[in-house]
Amino acid sequence: MRINTNIASLTAQEAAVNVNKNLSSSLEKLSTGLRINKASDDAAGMSIADKLRTQASSIGQGISNANSANTFIQIADKAMGEQSNILDIVKTKLMQAATSTTSSDGRAAILSDVKALLTQFDSISTSTNYNGTTLLNGADYTFQIGEKSTDIVTVTTTYAATTTSISGGEDSLKDLKDLTTLGASSALAYMSTIDTSLTGLNKVRSEFGSAQNQVESALRNMMTTKTNIKAAESIIRDVDYAAESANFNKQNIIAQAGTYAISQANQVQQNVLKLLQ
Image (cartoon, rainbow, N blue to C red):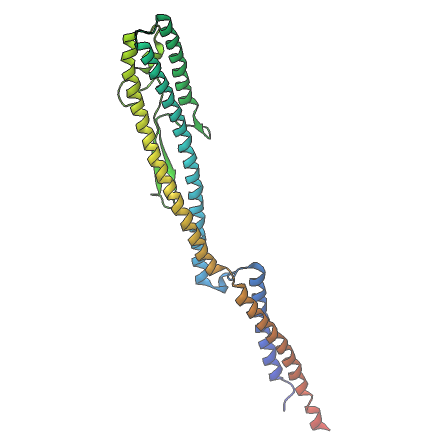
């Protein structure tokens, strides 16, 4: 028997170090809720989980962009809806002015109302904005609603005002607004101007509606995709508390047994004294 080198004790100590390392790793996972806390835990799994997390973050921003785009489009659509209502009212007033039962004084009052309505029409065009960005100015707006550069939705607004052509052809809204007198024949003529303007305005609103449907469809898809990606990441990165608790208890028992084994290995050396008696 040899006492200078206690092989049994060294073996038990080595095992105890490994068990304590496993025990520490198990405690780390239980305390953080993550199965992967560092690359050495699962290098391949960490790489995949990080990519999934980045993808989920990108989609999350896309969802935010889509919600903003939806609000943007709704504001513009509501504004054009009010302009459409104004033109409807203007047309009914022109119809009233075009009939012979309306007096000259009545037509003068109607013209005054029409001017006020068209002034409000222009005011809506210049004041409608989202976060300081004027909406009804005839510009193209692009919304990034996905993680790829091609995941975009573009809408083109119209400068809906009396100073421009709403329908794509020359109209006379500005001339109507600048009138000093309104006769039955001129009232009749300007009714077609209102119809042309309404046609152009409704065409733009229809395009906005299509864009909004596209944005809402993309939004629903992104929300579903993000949920699935986060679930996939969770499977890879998050700890299974039931399994890890069982592993911790196992390592804890082994650690206690290892401590006992070390004490017994050291005790065995004392048997050498019996040989010296």
